[in-house]
Amino acid sequence: MTAFALAIGVGSKNSNGDWLEVFYQQPLLHPADDLIAAAKSALDYQGGNEALEVDGGELLAFAEAIEATYPEQAALARACTESEKPVVVTVLASDEQASSTPEVYLKLHLLSHRLVKPHGINLTGIFGLLPNVAWTNKGAIDLADLPQAQLQARLQGELLSVNSVDKFPRMTDYVVPTGVRIAHTARVRLGAYIGEGTTVMHEGFVNFNAGTLGTSMVEGRISAGVMVGDGSDLGGGCSTMGTLSGGGNIIISVGEKCLLGANAGVGIPLGDRCTVEAGLYITAGTKVQVLDDHREVVETVKARDLAGKSDLLFRRDSTTGAVQCVTNKTAIELNNELHANN
Ligand SMILES: CC(C)(COP(=O)(O)OP(=O)(O)OC[C@H]1O[C@@H](n2cnc3c(N)ncnc32)[C@H](O)[C@@H]1OP(=O)(O)O)[C@@H](O)C(=O)NCCC(=O)NCCS
Image (tube, rainbow, N blue to C red; front, top):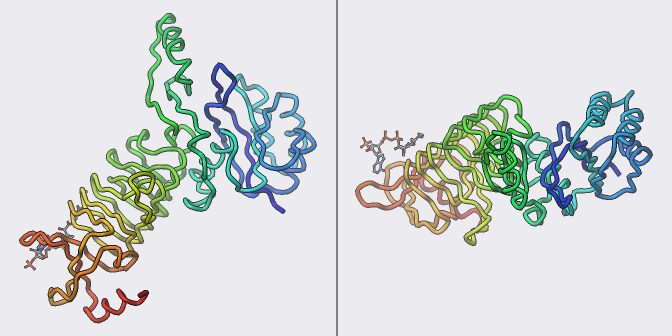
């Protein structure tokens, strides 16, 4: 059976020798069997999911074994023989739950390299394997080691700048996928999936296991687990409801060619070509008046009943305050659609 993933990485450890993070320049999804065979012969890989810490001699042997068939991986292995930092070859025989920090980092890289889509990889238990790290201009530093590192820098007349304290680093320090603009790189975490053609503006945010499938203008927040379809725009400061806290368990997605207005929010999945008025937050339980094409109220439903439906415009009636859903379709058609799954 083909293995799930393989990657050569350079990482950082704390003063206790625990991994803090790993950078994989060229992660491979479903590596060829002969790469796995080379890992077995050169690196003593015994099978299963393993993060093999390797020395220069092992890397050289691995490079020689794969030179003819995988010259880019071989060149990377050779470059890593010179590393001052620990080098790891991580092999995932399967996508089962990760059991080490290098394994989690490989999974996050697979997402940000667009090799797997959000929800397409097992991220169970990753928080417990990701240390909280000071991300500095000198790289990752364990919080326990930080005061000493800060003093050392000062004594050398330098400033150690802490950019963030978090379990996830910014994505762009690990990979910049092709065809994207990211105005404020700290707002996109490693593990985000940023589609070709997407622009993330300063107010935009993209969490891990979340992102855009194609061209999008992101000026709002894409919470963990949320996917946004091609051609959809997220207006300034808008919100997509996540499932990490607060009891929400509906996975939010936005279809193609949607517009979430500025400061709008969605707590239900949207179909294609939907619009949410600026400033309107739709939660699953929001009571929504459904209007027909004569703008008459035909019924009142909960927003969750409209989940995933296409061609809807949500707005708050500015005179009555009622949340309304306007559609181009006739009320009869909409009714049928609404109740089709009952
Ligand atoms: C909801 C929204 C899409 C409606 O825009 P629209 O379809 O162009 O609608 P219009 O403003 O042309 O209004 C059409 C009619 O609906 C009425 N209307 C619009 N919004 C209404 C509201 N909230 N309550 C009551 N009536 C409303 C208008 O008064 C107008 O009535 P009329 O036919 O009697 O003249 C728009 O207001 C909006 O919020 N767009 C989001 C833009 C945005 O935030 N982009 C991101 C920037 S970062």
